[in-house]
Amino acid sequence: MDIFKIEGPVKLSGDIRINGSKNAALPIMAATILAPGKSTILDVPDLADINVLKTLLTSLGATVETRQKGEVEIDTSVIDNPVGEYDIVRKMRASICILGPLLARCGRAEVSMPGGCAIGDRPVDIHLRGLRELGAEICLKNGNIVATAPKGLIGKQIFLGGPFGSTVLGTANILMAATLAKGTTVIESAACEPEIGDLAGILNAMGAKITGMGSPRLTIEGVKSLSPVKYRVIGDRIEAGTFMVAAAITKGNLRLHNCNLDHMLAIVDRLEHIGVTIDTADDGCVVTRTGSIKAADITTQTYPGFPTDLQAQLMALLAHADGNSIVTEKIFPDRFMHVAEMNRMAANIRKEGASAIIAGVKNLVAAPIMASDLRASAALVLAAMAAHGTTIINRVYHIDRGYEKIEKKLNAAGAKITRESV
Ligand code: EPU
Image 1 (cartoon, rainbow, N blue to C red):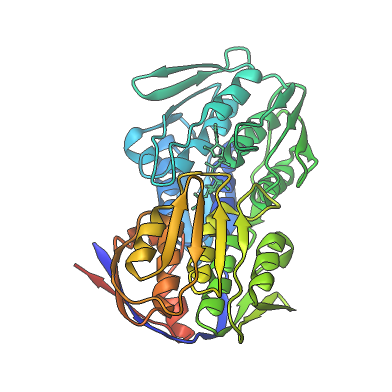
Image 2 (image 1 turned 90 degrees about the vertical axis):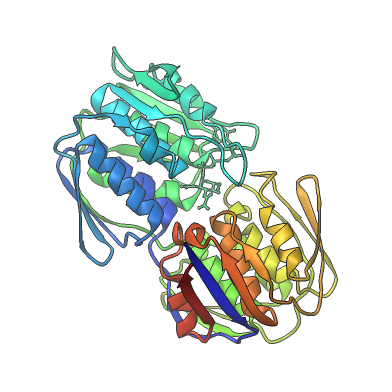
């Protein structure tokens, strides 16, 4: 198992290219199931989660080849085993996004029911409700979701909201299934995240008829078939936000490339409030901090609100603020595993229900700590770069799920991170 040894404090400066988005690439790769033949997806990040999806697609009958950096060719001419096996699906919850396209293509799909994870219990009831509305028959057998559509899928108006608002992968599943359904589907309370817009982008390029991207109402006019395409994935707004915090927490200066600030308005708003300067540049931005860190209140929300996937990273920054901040989780109320680890580094954070109250301290101090989930781990790397001494982060495999060579990118900008196998 790998660990990171991180020496701090450091001051970062330099250029960093942001990768294609993990959370856009995953449903986009699943969408190739709908279009028999060879699709080529560009700017796919090289990540553990992407590898899980490649394995999963291969197990369904597809052929997946990585041609050169970021270029993945997926041949879905044959999909003859519409079964998402437990041994693959258990490694990544997002595997659920094969359910909708498999059902639409094969009229039958079986996908192991995803379990909980470190950020909460994460049900998929809304995915199943949406597919049932389209005419699927669904039951649970031996821990597997078994979905069939004996009469094909039939479009209709579907309300897809849940107790925490819209669902990203739930919207992805229904959107993909609806492209080949008979008639028109209207998804109300659809997720507005840019990753859903990107998914609709590839589906339309394949020949689907989707309108309303970026709004909570998606209209899908079903078509008979879709064709394979070549498609480039958008930049990863969560990776970009993480590096923005890296510049801010180290009182540094980073020029980020392949970063679309239009997708990051809530993040820019909070960082500017905190005292970070973000200047637009050609294909991205320049992020600088010179003064002190101001306290701020942050509430995570569905897009265009502040993303839950950057909550932990912002908390690492606010741990150094002048004054008290409150961070409230409205998407995953239990997503606070990083609090105890940051407190081991002398942060002063108290959890109160779905909020954390952060009393800023002058310095964090190095300690041995444990990565618990992907974004929490990124937050610990950020904290460690600002902390005094050598921090050891255990279980960094979590970070490899969503950040491609994070230590190389940060080291090139002045960080002191070594990866060791123990
Ligand atoms: N929810 C339900 N029922 C459902 C589906 C969701 O109650 O059937 C609830 C969830 O429990 C949660 C809320 O709705 O409280 C929103 O969850 P959502 O379905 O939107 O999450 P997701 O689609 O499973 C994606 C990202 C997550 C990100 C969330 C929220 C991917 C692959 N994953 O998950 O990313 O946190 O949206 O924005 O796109 C990450 O990258 O680290 C990550 C966890």
